Image (cartoon, rainbow, N blue to C red; front, side, top):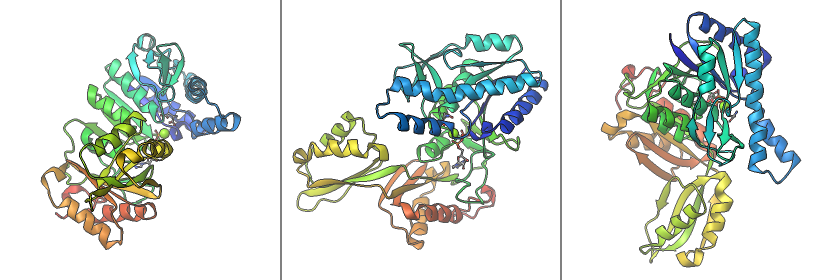
Length: 411
Ligand code: ADP
Ligand code: ASP
Ligand code: MG
């Protein structure tokens, strides 16, 4: 018998109608002989609403209380889904993360799973029941409720699929799979049938919200078969595999990210150890650095720019301010009006023309490139935020990502 872990995202269980439809689908899936474990996200935008509620009530928001609050969204969804299943004659039991066996570290709001012993889930399955697990939650080593962070329900599902040795982990969402770019921005974006973990990881690291990056890392590390698909049309979606795309695409996707700011430290003395001091100080302040660019030096001084998440700009500014004299620097400024556009494709490993075509396309659209970074299968450019949608659309067009790879012209 096939064992499937099926996770339903916020929109997929966003209303009573949606919950009933999901329950119909699960009932059909079970009648076909599958054994099923469900993972539910909070309904619709409930997580955002709970976060807003906390903001309205208090300025001190202890992590322990925040996690108790946020995980309530997933508890509510899995209890409702379980009830809808009962209505359809399917024996189902809802479980909190703790009851499902998720033990985490004590890092509230972004806890990491350190142990998973899903004995109650196995018992329910053995009794022919459908377990419905609250996503993105667990219990910490000091016995408090923890939240695994935004998008954590994907990780809950992948971890369960691994621990239960499931045949596949199906992530149901509001689009029918992983697309060549965000279908909200580019209407002719193309669904990718099969994508490699490497490419999907680069996509999720550069702004693609689906699936959550941690879940992709987890699935790759433990060899979990991932299937990203629609909870609205029930047609097969995108399979994520180790061996990668059978399509031999040069480029698979364009992603974009508006969540980072560009910080520039100006007039830094150009001598050994200065960059080390700067980035050690930022690391000690827990600032996540992404792209880094150092300009050519003029008269012994240079500028260093790097990107950081918007929420960390204040922390990063304070850290750099505290060492301005050690760096011999004139000052530090943050620019939040930037965005990153990235091109991802395993085929670029062996094709040196990709970066040039990308830069030409941006230039032809009057888009200035402020920073560049590359990996073996990715090229990213920082551009003005106001131009990022145009950058995404023009690159998607230039690389013909709307048509099947075998029909694309060579670049
Ligand atoms: P869920 O709540 O179901 O876990 P999210 O709302 O976090 O899912 O993510 C799904 C959304 O991600 C889609 O509605 C889609 O607009 C957006 N998205 C952005 N880029 C892509 C992409 N390349 N492929 C698929 N979806 C994408
Ligand atoms: N509901 C949480 C969020 O919106 C967790 C999840 O759905 O993965 O981030
Ligand atoms: Mg979501």
